[in-house]
Length: 61
Image 1 (cartoon, helix red, strand yellow):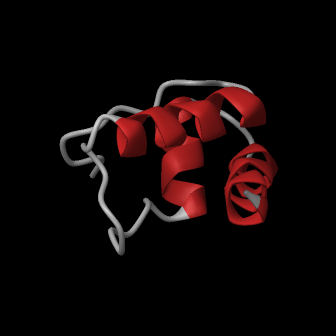
Image 2 (cartoon, helix red, strand yellow; image 1 turned 120 degrees about the vertical axis):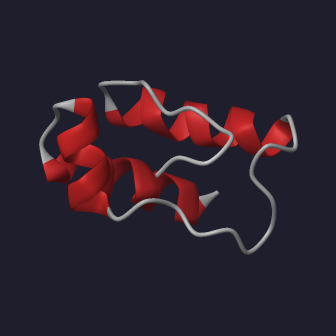
C-alpha cells in the first residue's frame, strides 16, 4: 500500500512530516496518490480524523 515510502507517525503532525520527508527524499513524487484515509488510519492504528488532519495540513502547505 505505501509503495517505497514509510508512514509511521501516530499524531497528525508526525504523519504529515513522514509524507513531507518522503517527498524530500524523492520516494514520493508529484502526482502520486496517498493511501486512502481510512486504510492508512487502520494500518497505523489511529482514528481516521487523525489522518484527515494530517492530509489537511499537507494541503495547506
